[in-house]
Image (cartoon, rainbow, N blue to C red; front, top):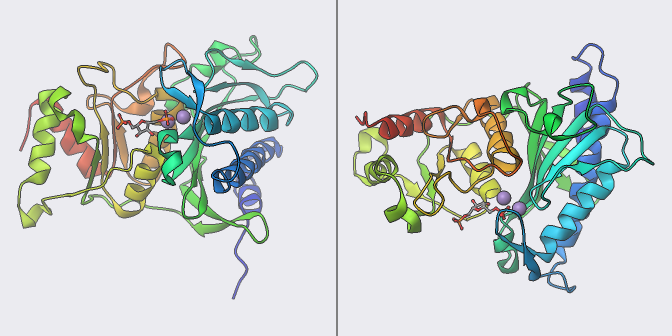
Length: 334
Ligand code: AHG
Ligand code: MN
Ligand code: MN
C-alpha cells in the first residue's frame, strides 16, 4: 500500500504549482501545525492538570475566558512570532493587532485566529478547535497594522482549522480545494486523510441554537419551521445537530451536508460570530468544497471588515440550503 503524504509533503507539492513560491508559506503552515500539536497535547490531558475552567476574565467580545483559551492563544503567538513569516497577527482573545517583536524578522503574511473555538464545551469533553485566516500584507507601510488585518475574505490566501476531537484533524485551503489531515500520534505528523473534500450540494442537517428562536427575525424562524415540515420529496424534516462549537458543527456538515445557522437576534443585532476569526475563514473552506456562506443577504467573503472583532450573521454549508435560506430572508419563500 502506498504511503500517505504528510501535511508538510502535501503543502510542498501544492506550493510547486505556484510560480515564485519561496517556501515561506510552507513554513507558515508548518508553524500553525506545530502550534496545533502543542494545543492538542494540552487539550488531551486537560483534566489532569490545573488547566480546566475559567481564567477569571472576559475578552473583547464579552465571553468568559477559559484557561485553555489563554494557553492556545499564547502558544500560537509564541510559535508564529519567531517564524519570520509574519508581519503581524490578531487573535479573538486580544483587543488590538499583535506586533512581531523587533528581535524577530518580519515576513510578508498576516494571520488572524480564534485560538480555541467552542471553549465553553471544553470542561465536558466536547470537541473544540482552532480557526485561522492568512492574508498577504495589504501595503508596504504598516508592519502588520490594521490596514493589513482588515481585509475581506475574498483576499484570503489560505484559511483552515484544527479540531481537537475524537482525533486531531487539520483542514485547510489555499484556493485549490479543501484537504484534511489526521494527526498520527505515534509519529507526531498530520497525515492526509481527506483529500479534495466536496460537500454535498444539499444536506439533511440543521445546526442552530434554536433556544434563541423567539429572538430571531421572521425569515430565520420561517426557514427553520419549513425544514421541520414533513415532505419526503425534499428530504424534510431535517435532522437537528448542534454541538455549540462552530468549528465542529461546521466540519460535520462539511462532510455530511447541511446548514449551520447563527442569525442576528434581538440580543446580538449584528450576529454573534466574528467575521475575521470565524465566519470568513470557514466561508473560504465552504466555498472551496462547493458550499456557500452568507449573512442571509450578502456573501460572507465580500463583507469588508471595519473592525477586528466585527460580528456577522452566518448561514454556511451546502449550497442549495444556503440559497434557500437567503430566499426566506428576502421573504421569497417557496
Ligand atoms: P468561542 O468559544 O471561540 O467564543 O466561540 C463560541 C461560538 C461558536 O463556537 C459557537 O457556535 C457559538 O459560539 C455558540 O453560541 P451559543 O452558545 O449562543 O449557541
Ligand atoms: Mn469561536
Ligand atoms: Mn475562541
